Image (tube, rainbow, N blue to C red; front, side, top):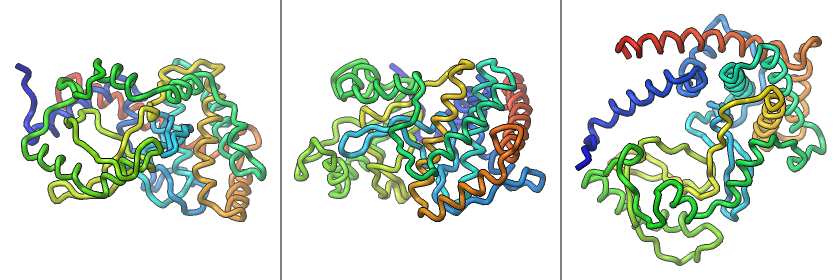
Length: 338
């Protein structure tokens, strides 16, 4: 019989798992060390960034947090899909965070420094495109790796997803490394949530379900990986006197796998992802605000390279900080101090 941790013992195991994954590569370390990014933003020695208009930003805008996302009608598009650190802030913060993520991915793919410089130029080029008058999102040049991921997302359905993730078409969650059982109290609380009217409305809101359809709880488990938050299909509620949100997953909500970048793919990927973030920012701005922000970005653009000097300098500073911190993390992990 398999042994699973009690709820009180989950946190320590999850922290150990996170530290192990962060030791696997510098790119994974960057993804798991958002706190360091904000410590850098608060430091007195950091590069002065362009002051953009205050809007809702991702707050943790790295490559892994951008991917296919379906709306309630089933339409799928590449969007920012993780909003755990979302705040009202400077859009330049998202650009720097994404630039750091791309630079880290380039280093992990053994690309030279010149490739990183070109990627950052492509990133700002794609981002500013979204603010140009007459820009059409459908005209974006989508890299092949992202196109394959989007195609796979559009053809996904519940049967294929269950067969891939659960190794069975039956709706039963297999317990093991990925899923842990709920305690009796947790299951009772989840069952109570499933009976709430607001949750029924959330589930039946999708186009293929009747508004008055009944909702049945089939199975529940603790997902070890965790669940990224999305801007669609979410419900704020309470569980054990704690505020939580419920998110409905669709088969189309798949994660993009961009493990390695070739020299040819790097620029196109950076330009496309920059445009995706630019679109997310531009939707929140009036025409006049878009124009002034675009003017500010171009005003501080370097004459020698395409990327603004503040973006290049910021990414270099952060990459150096994270590389040292990553190696120190690996040392602590190797000697058993972390």
